[in-house]
Image (cartoon, helix red, strand yellow):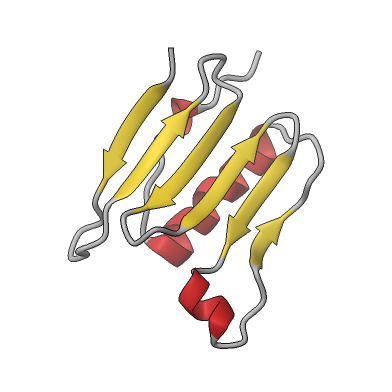
Length: 98
């Protein structure tokens, strides 16, 4: 069963839907404005993207992208970048490590 969490950062009109795979190995973060801003996968690494508006204004796509297997350190990095750029505080236990 897939887990879903809704996060609305304080002072923001935006809402973020956080989906966690049934095996606890992948997290997707999607914004109510239509942006898919992040994905963390133990198998495929980190994909953290700027918004479409930022990309259309000439910014690059990736805020932090690794495309390599990821562990606990990368998960903490993903959480930190989500908080820094989107004010989204992801619970540390969304991803399970042995």
